[in-house]
Length: 533
Image (cartoon, rainbow, N blue to C red; front, side, top):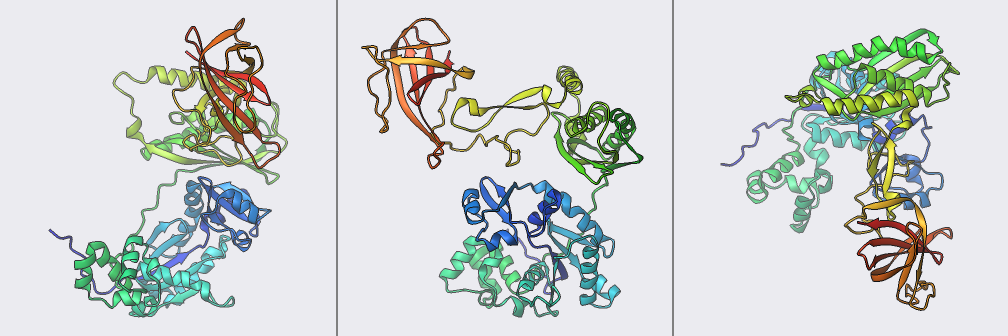
């Protein structure tokens, strides 16, 4: 049975407001950077988004970070955080909902509104759009583009068409009712965001949405199927998609204001105990648990200390109080007082999970809960960095792959760019294949490898051995061991373009007892990196 298409012949009159470069705008606000900063947001080593100042220097999406930094010397690179986009856009959506209902968030930075009601209330579509612009300008968002047309697809293209207007013109494009087919006719096929269909249509000689819309709908459906038929309706200005009102999420944030300001850590911890309990109870009433907590501390001097805390299980009231205290102890606070009093504590559940997904098992979670509470207690007494857990990171050397992070912090792969932790699933050149050694020494130990005549074995710049290894000795044992078998060298070249780069050679040696060792040769010196059991 074929899937039926909606039979609507008139698209919903839609207003679309668009905030260009929203991920960049959210990052600039989050980190307090000037609007003219040359900024890029990186995702997996590539530019995900860039500011206008960076684009003027030739930076564009898809470039490698190193190439982008070469094009713009003053470039600021930050890790892309999708949760920041959503969190920063929530006040924008809430501000629009105060003046007109029926907002649908397409994605952070792009929203759709049914314009029929607001246009009647404010007098016209232009006046309704002006109210949106004024409302967002009141909260500090001045770069807003608005398009009004038949259907969300045409309205989005109208909003993006504001880039072609004069600088003095209002950032608004209104397409008269029934004029969407004419407006869309000159657009290229790429705006449909269907690469396979675009390639096929171009092979058939179709270059624009107008050419595509001129085809008969029945022929398009028979040739390209349901997806092609939907794209044909969009090109014809008959987008059947309606604006779906969003359900505003429950307000789960907690804000505690203090007057007069609190100047002692113990005072703040005592006062926050009740507020933290109320915060956790509110989450439970909503049927969720907080696994990632964002804490913002505001001082009377205007400084803001923000940190994102992750919990191995979920936060309870005591955990929230501990994180607030540890965050203060990690700043310029001392054990007896603060350099500036705290006037506000803002708790944001950055990530929540369904309460039912964390229900205790039939026999409870005694061992895991006891372990967590014990480690959390040690952290509360000795500090946040006193309890560390090991995670596997990426890298060439085994010492680089072992990283210790504080208990409950964000694991590898979610760290900001400023941290040395690397993605472990990257295809690192020179990475040691499995199986991994059983024992990795915290500090590599000196060794010696000689040939049958007792001369040191070395590797020339071309990667050739001076002689076959016959005996080796290491600081981890006594005496000299005969080499039963060996493999290598496997060269590792780190930062070959930098004079301070390293060139190493890795070897595997097996003695007559069957014990295997992993050795490194660097600057004509041998080192033991690890051993196999």
